[in-house]
Image 1 (cartoon, helix red, strand yellow):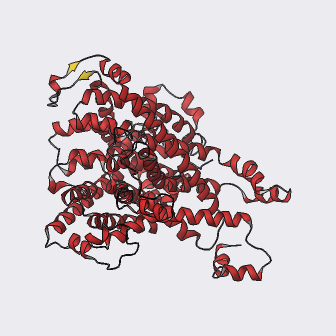
Image 2 (cartoon, rainbow over the protein chains, first blue to last red):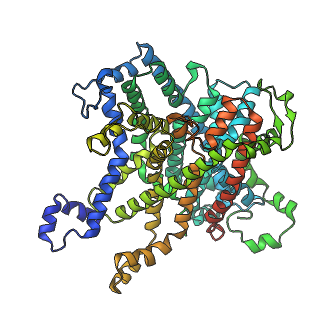
Image 3 (cartoon, helix red, strand yellow):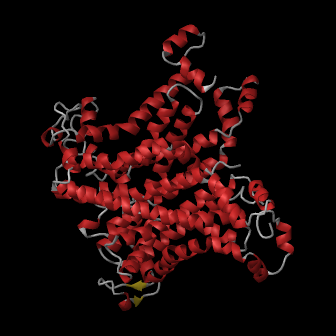
Length: 301
Length: 315
């Protein structure tokens, strides 16, 4: 049964069951119970984050908790997003810092990664394997291994407390990951297309720019957004390299924001929610590409 | 096509020596040169430097010109410390159980979502959310839900009649690690799910139908048709989950900071605490190198599995 037929037949499971002799078997029940429980596990924290964020300070601290807020309020969101208030100014500044760092990391990373990934996919130069393996292995290194030497390096370069310290260090994970993902996309573009272009008189570089680049645009977009999300969510380096309150990014800013108003759980949940929404939406829209990007290589057989 | 696309391995083997081959491919290197420079600065040099530092005692002022060479002293001190054994036990428990449960839940979800049915797309999207959401936001909301006085999980268990008063999840050395593993699995099972879903799509339908006709049960088909096809994707998923878990920082750091009494301290949080809490960069570097060696072993297997198909492709 195709997906569309399935969708058409689905509005009422009961009806389907009545019309057809097939009934819900033991495996179907197992499947639905499992999926329902898993769905609750996956989404309950997000739901609770939202429900807390629309409660007043006092309502949030009651025991037993108000399961559904009796007097929902948007006060925390308004405070976070209004530039007139101190909190709002800070939150918006952290947001802008995050946006700048993530965008710069992504652009620099992708621009450098595109030709490298192409070369790894197509050319057979000596040392290719060794270099590519080091790219692969880098994906496994813990951030903390780089944290100590990079921290000392940033002090030498006098970059501590600047957004450039983050942009540079985010390349430690952004660049190898982009090279790896993009190589997967290039591997899937048939070599024959470039060969045809070469026969028509294009140079190797022209074939790359005119033939391969347009075809790999979806791959580049997926890679860019993936790298953006990683940078947007990054915490360890930002925690270590930034002290200056005006330079913080959202993940670390969130914590300061919380420490400052010790018991303001609804405010914190509102901030966490605002921070998460853009990324989740971006991801859900481009789900298809991410799933492909993430699983690339692992299922190639 | 002289240097690039059509080249086959035998030509390369019979061709000129290494220097000659490098010369012949010289323009190829232009493509990777920017990446190489950046990787050298932000990856190669730091790795070298952390190894170097691991043999030195560093001053708290971080003036590295005053560091003192101590040989393998840092290593022997770490390996003999009692706390190292506790932290290592925590790390093993954390890594093994997180990986195991994330894989089981993810694989279960993949099997449940493998066939097209009503709401499959939205359901998959919803299950992916914990994986995309910022780990910081996730850690804070779980910390709030685990709150010992007014947390929603404690209240829920009371409501169900399982306990008569809210449990103290995070301030109890007995429950803290398990509580954190629940959060970590929450974050990671979607990753296992998409990996395994992609793997399941490579299992040919005909095989299933043929096995069904031969009278194989669902369970028999699972073990004899599905599983053999998923060997390599299972290996990679488990390997990546293991690596990720060994490297986790955000969840334990934000939720407990390794406490209470180090009960949720794992390697990474211990290293961070040594370096940036107690400013002992030398010892922390030695600790990192130990972790790094464990990663290299895992990395070796990762590269082997990931590049298995590579030689046949695009040559």
